[in-house]
Length: 226
Image 1 (cartoon, one colour):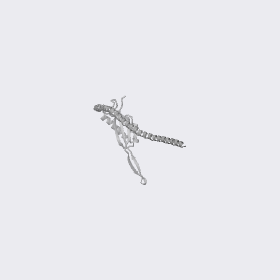
Image 2: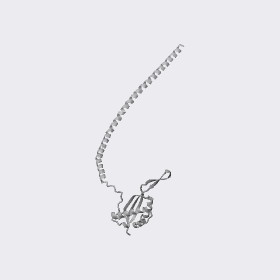
Image 3: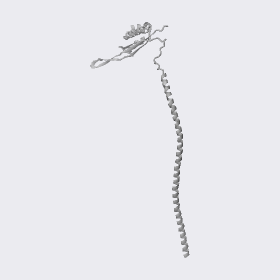
Image 4: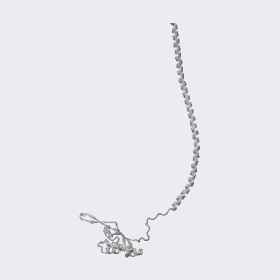
């Protein structure tokens, strides 16, 4: 019995020693791992510090190329500075070569018939009444127009007849034309200012009276010989 107890005790001691040895090994392994990790980090940092140095060296090299490129635009600027005065000189030449603007008036044809004009403004007659006579006279020979106006019952006929006689006198005195050999090329009647008056009426009222005026213009041309 004593031998068996001794054997058991020895076996237990061996097992306890083996367990202690495993525990010591497991305790040592994490410490080694922890020590290895900071060392790896330090090495990585060193590599990171070295890489930017290489990048900076690579960046410095193209700067020399940029400097060379920067010199080329400087030459181009000199060329532009030389060209600018020439361009300005060309613009100044163009300004001097500009021709005067053509006049809006239509050039007169030498064969075109002369036109003699006369006008009467602020004639005390309504434009509608004056146009009735002007439409009858337009385009007629001056002798025919005078005959028609002489026997017209309308009062404005006398004013138009005076105006036609004035235009014929202008043709004789100013243009060396024969006044009796003219025709009425155009006659226009435009409305002038209206004179406003009032007439008293029953029960203290007042009614308006519009006294209209006209501007009459006549143009004569010589009769063409057939």
